[in-house]
Amino acid sequence: MPRTDPAPATVIEMAGVEYHGRAAGALIPILTGVDLHVAAGEFVALCGPSGSGKTTLLNILGLLDVPAAGHYTLLGTDLARASDRARTRLRSQYLSFVFQAFHLSPALTVQQNVELGLMCQGVDRRTRTATARSVLDSVGLGHRLNARPGTLSGGEQQRTALARALARRSRLVLADEPTGNLDAVNAEAIMRLLGRACAQTAAVVMVTHDETLAARADRVIRLANGKVAAR
Amino acid sequence: MSTSARSGIRWADTVRESIVGITSRPGRAALFVIGATLGTAMLTASLLLASAASAQVTRQFDELRSTRITITQPDSPTWLETAALQRVRAIPTVVTAGKQTLTADPLPLTVHSSIASTDVPAIVGVADAHTLRSLGATITKGRLFDHGATTRRDQVVVIGAALAASLHHPRPDGRTVIWIAGRDYLLGGIYDVAPRGDPDILVRAYLPDTASLGATGARFRSPELVVNAAMGHVDTTALLAATAALPGDVSALQVSIPADPQGLRSAVTSDLQTFIEILGLVALAIGMIVTGNAALTAVNQRRVDIALRRALGVSRGAIATQFLLETGICGAAGGLLGVYLGQTATALVAIANNWPIATNLTLLPAGAAIGALCGTLAGLYPAIAAARAQPAIALRS
Image (cartoon, rainbow over all chains, first blue to last red; front, side, top):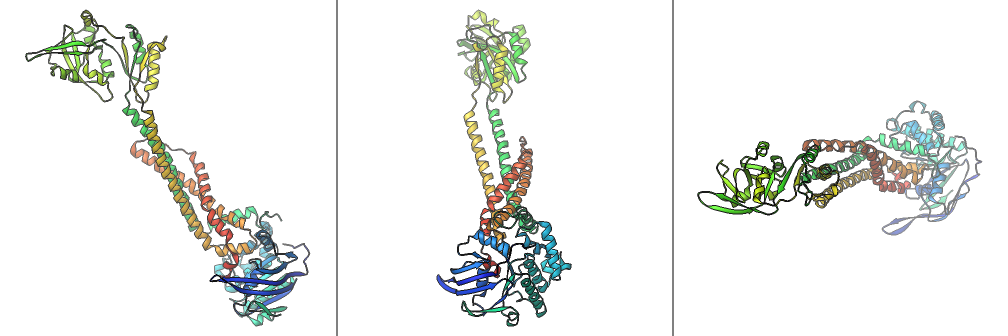
């Protein structure tokens, strides 16, 4: 699916973002005063110990959650007062996700899973079929188009999930521990593909525990106790 | 690239997703369908059975209602001619028809026997055997007089069982004589009255011919046309018989028809129908609950799927629409199946009870529509729950 609108230089602009959880009726700070700037084509790794707020931050970046305070501008759109409809439209047009648990639909084939991402963008049937086949070819799954996710290895499943994200030609790819369930060889392949996504002018924000993989990003942001500890 | 206004996903793709959702999980879809099938089958059966039961109630009321019609023209001793009687008998819904002429006042009846002599006043009628049968007379002793007795002007009499009791049970043995206003008649028979017959005839005596009473000086009322109508056709037959009896002046006639317990019949029919229909609606509600529960379970089981679609940019409205379509489509299929099963069950019940079969194929599209509506309503809460699901929580799993 060709993208025709010009890409803004800044993808993410975040300032003073706060987020609270709730436990036993009390508010618990999860993110405190988080500032973040991600440019187009940038590969950013988010690192930090468990409970440091990485996934929460990723959900806020992906418009799946709403911060309690602070400013978040995505591709020039201020999201302070954005409605659910507007956030949904932005997710459809500009965002893609890669999850540690892959989240492939077991009832659909590999090709249909990739097409699903395009279908949610409103792409017509013929185009999404052609795009899905092409992207699956590029990630080395051209021979498994009609396989069900349950018959694939972990690496193949994650490549399918990544193909779903790449096919959407999104401006921002958010990856939550994308190699967490994979061996070193498959992890390497995924990292290579994420790098390719960056080359296609998408920014990538990846949450990872793996310092080696994080080191391959353009920039590493470390979170600790809900705050940005180091950039 | 055309997209719907609410979300990126196209309307046609939402429909396709619904169909995939149904076909990829046949067990769950079967539960949706079973819920709708149960509900619509019970509703169909109850509606049709209510109709059949109402027809049955009407038939039983008709059976209990007397079918005897009496028509007369006051103060007109010669109004009913033989030709008129024949026209009445030619009406298809007339079972029997005859003519009776009653005395205006009771005449004294006496039985002379070796034990005692009893004098009892009674209305005396002149009629043929047809008329007596139309009145519901059934012979218990002796015999009714026939056409020959009328032709020969036999001096015979038949009396009702109550009158016979008042006369100390005379026996029609060929020798017993009954005196009526001073003239003697041989007792031919004693009759009782059949169910739905005229009980007044039990205290009357009947002779085959008027001529023999002429000399007694008895005064007569106007002749009466007595018609026994086919069951369920009393009102129509009364109108036709009056027209046939006196075509030129129907308004001059007095027509007596047995009372129709219309109010009671309507009340019983209405109560029965309401009761059965409420049962059907309860079954439909239970079917909806089954479908709704299955849909709610489906939402819980598919929460990651739903969250993924939300993350990929499908709106809440499109998610809810997909679930409503799934339950609606299954509801329509269940509705079709339910109407078919309901009609089959009703037909079997009707055959077993010898009721009229009240099936109706035009109910099939109505069943599909009701099933779709009920499926959609049952899926409303699960669809809202699916639309409100927080994708971030589900995707963490």
